[in-house]
Length: 257
Image: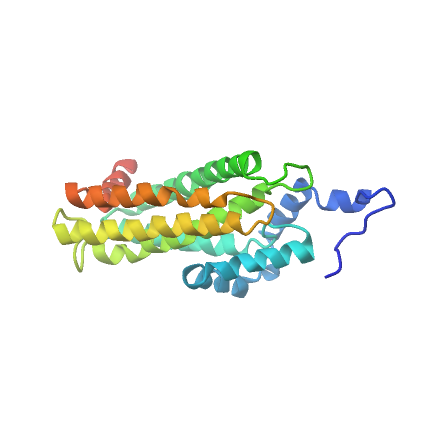
């Protein structure tokens, strides 16, 4: 594979190439494409969403290819983010219907979920993982090898998507129907808490895959350690009758008061 940039005689990138690959230039290019839907590859983004459920390793192999061809790990196409936002909006409106919220309450919930739960918490988690990976997980700390913040954000989005589908879409069909996981009935909170276990397990595993895919990181297996705490919490919740779904619904109702 030929390099995408040509080093000058002293071994550093040319000034034009260096400017083109700065974080600011990449961010500007990404944000500019948000307003050009025809330049987005929605078919490829849908392919990624499918494989995040069935074979997430294949998604991260594509990140390797992007690094080789475009000299960056992070996505340069916002199509995945756009589709994720649509999923988030539709599923949140579904929550509003299931919880018998009015139009104004549903809109208020949507703003909370988009700007606080998705964007705010996403920025916080991505920044935290970016700092941790660059400070503690680098094999050979160097200016030439570091985790891009954009890549940390992409890993979060990848891990967040299955969690969103399970807890914000599939769960809707159980809240007031089928086994009624909103109730205090044993089968209800058993099914509901199991969905939470699967969703958070997906998030942890896909996050682990994202950082273990970077060849310059070490000890990424520590990202799997929270599975022990997750399993313990699940057993306790079933034993003590905790209902995570009911807690989420009550929290959503409290937000829109």
